[in-house]
Structures are given as C-alpha cells and as structure tokens.
Amino acid sequence: MEIIFASFEFESAAQAQGHTHIAGVDEVGRGPLAGPVTAAAVILNIANVPEGLADSKTLTAARREALYEIILASAHCCIAHASVEEIDELNILRASHLAMERAVAGLPQAPCHILIDGHMIPTKLKGRATAIIQGDAKSLSIAAASIIAKVARDRIMVDLAQQYPGYGWETNAGYPTKMHQSALLNLGVTPAHRRSFKPVHNMLYQDKSVTL
Image (cartoon, rainbow, N blue to C red; front, side, top):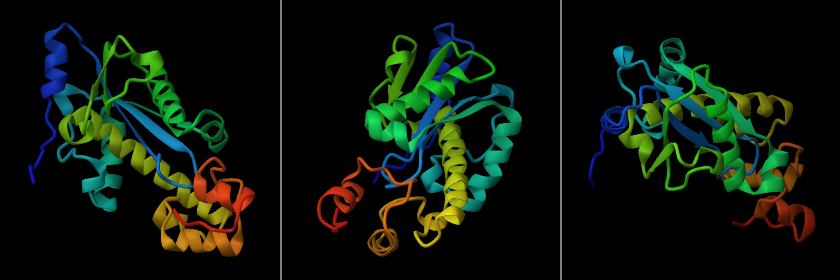
C-alpha cells in the first residue's frame, strides 16, 4: 500500500501561476445519520506551517485537538455548516458543497485559488478551484482544513449527545454504528436525525428496520 505524505506541491504550483493566497477546503460528515455536515477553509501562513499536518483520519483525537488550536492561531480559517434540514432538502452532496462554499466565503482573506478534497468542485467555486482526489492526504492546506472540520463537527456532536443521550454521538459522531442503530430502534428518531437517509426514513415511513 502506497504511503502518501502531505506536501506543499499543489500550493507551490498555484503560486507559480501567480496565486498568492491559496485555501485548502475539506468537509466532514457525509456519512452520519445525524448532525450537520461541516466544512473548513484554511489559508496557511507559508512561513509558519504547523508541524505534523496530515489527513485528520490518520491522527489521534488528542493530536487533532492540539493541531486544531495551532492552526486557528497561525492561519486564516473559517468553519461552516449545512444543517440537517438543508441536507434533507438539498441532498447530502449539495449540502456538503454548500458548507464548502460558505467556508470559503467566510474567510477573512479572500483566496486567489482553492484546493478542494475530492473530485468535484462546488458550483460557486468553479473557475478558481482545483479538485484533488485524496487531497487531505496530499495537500498540507487541505489536511489542515480536514483537521479543523473534523474537530469542529465532533464538538457539535458531543453537544448534541448531551441533548439526545443514548445514541452514542459523543463517540460515534452520528455514524451508523451498532449502538446508534440500536438506539434508533429503542429510542426513536430525534430532530437531529437526517430524515432523507435510508435507515431513518425507514423508521419513520416504512418498517422499523435500520438495516443498511
């Protein structure tokens, strides 16, 4: 299995084309059954790039938390969300793109170019963005955004877990773990659940199965 190390390669290529402020953008939360989808946009300070930036999924929770604070203190950042209601109305792909667009729009410094994790560019960002498959593992700016988005959303889910105990959101972040699915059967659907997602939809409108 090839090991990929995040670098400044894509940022440097954009700089070579005359772009001075390059933002990395990533989102988290497409797969959960509950909670918002969260995106972050980060413009790193080239002279002060935090050490240890990597895809948030490869880091421990403690390391993500530490880097979260360091990134916020050393870079331009914006965190944005699309709500459960917007996810159900638009679909999860469009909602995740909406969160990305909001994150970019909220940056204190407008970016000249945007690097986005994935293979699709949100509509409002077309013409000034590059999509990078596995970008969170390849680009330091996207890796930073993945950390910011992950920590921010995890904190939201911890808060929601206190409002709606029993679903395990403080540990599963709303993903369809066995505990979460069992709680759906035993406790029912909460206002924080995504009604357009099949297991939740089935609970409400079809049978009582939460089989994926």
